[in-house]
Length: 138
Image (tube, rainbow, N blue to C red):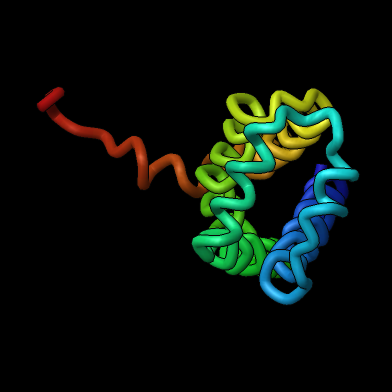
């Protein structure tokens, strides 16, 4: 199982480091983006250009790069994996509600599932912090 965890960690790290660098440092070309995802709903391109124009994608790119870097190191990969949960859910839901492009939805679902494997592999480490034993319900 350890080898599977290493493979998942480095796959996710590579993908998110690349995505973060792409958003932060590579110029955005709408025509290339529209060609690469031609089957996506037209409203998705409007949504993406709004995110790009407002600068929000730099924020997303920074956290993609940070989480990807944290996944590389054994000491920090659990923290990076926990940080990826809301980020990946937002990416997945953007494709579910805006692009409706099945390839993106399947890809994001697989990546989210792989991240869940990382989290549940280390469940014993983070479970006591979230589910503390208490004497009463309130």
